[in-house]
Amino acid sequence: MQLVDKQEIGVGKGFAGSIARLQITGADVPPTVVVKLPATWGLKRAFCDMAGYYERECRFYEELSTTVGMRVPRCYASQRGPGTDEAQTLRNAKRMKTRPGWLQRLALVKKVLGARLSRKRYALLLEDLGRLEVIEQADGCSLGRARQALDGLARMHARLWSSDQLDKHWLMDLAVLARVQQRRYVRAPPRFRKGYSALLGPNVEAHLQWLVDHGQQLAESLPGRAKTLVHGDYRLDNLFFDGDEVVATDWQICARGPGAIDVAFFLSCNLAEPASEREENELLDGYHDRLCEQGVVGYQRSDLLRDYHHMLLVNLWGMLPVASMGARVGAEGLYAPY
Image (cartoon, rainbow, N blue to C red; front, side, top):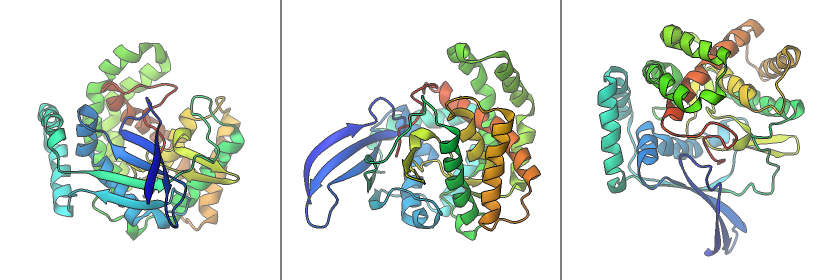
C-alpha cells in the first residue's frame, strides 16, 4: 500500500483529535480511507486521555462494532498503546467518586504536563463515507430523517438491551459516572452562564438551578433504569445517510445506560424546526414501536416517557462541564464526525 495524498477534514470542528482522508494505492485496498488520530497535547489531549476516549473508541471497533445492530464505518485497522485493565479502571472510577474537586483538577494539570511524554498512541483506519449524504447539524433535519435516525437507534438499543456483552471494563457506566458529573456540573453553571448568557433563556436558567438543587437525586436513580449500549453523542454531525440506512460514527463516549439518553439528545438539538408536542410524541411512539418489534419486552411507553424527560435534563447536565472548558456550543458543535 502506498500513500498518494492526504487531506485534512473537519478542520476547526474537532474537539478530541484530528481526521484526514488518505488516498492510497495497492492491491485489494479501497481508493480512500479515513485516519483518526488523537489530539497532540494540551488540555484536550489530557482530558480525553483521562476520560478514556481514545482507548474506548478503539476497543469499540475491535470488540463491539460488528454486533451493535446498526451500520458503522468499516474498521481496517486499530492501533492503541498500553491500555487500562479492569482493576485499574475500577481504581480510577473509585478515585473519581471520592476525590475532592481540587484534587481532580490537579490530576488534570499533571496529565496536561505529561501529555507529550505519554506512551499511549492511538490510530484508527476507517471506511471513507464521504460519498454518503451528510446533513449539517446547524441546518437540522426533517421529521422524516429524524424518524430514520431514531429507527437506527432503536435497532441498536434493542440488539444490546440488558446484554451481557455490555459487561466490559472499558465501557462507561452512566450510573457510576453520575456522582462525578454532578459535582462537575455544580461548578460549571456560573462559568457557562458567563460565557453563553446570550444562548440562555429564563426557562433554561430555571432548569440549570433545578439540577444544582436536585441533580444528585436524579443521578442516584440511574442504576435502576434498563441499560443498553448508548452512543453518547448521537447527532447529525456524527451521522451519514445511505438511502434508508443511517451510519453512525464517533464512538468515543459510548457507554451502557438508558437508551433514552440518545433519543433525548438527538431530538433536543437536531431538528430543522422545533417539533410540536404531537410530532414529538409520534417520534417517541415510532422509537418505542421499533424497540418492541426488535424483541424488547417489559419496557412500557410510560417508562420511555419518564426516561426521556429525565434524560433531557441529564444531557444538559453533562454538556455544561465540557462547555465550561472552552468548547464551543452552537452551529459547529463540539466534535467532528467519525
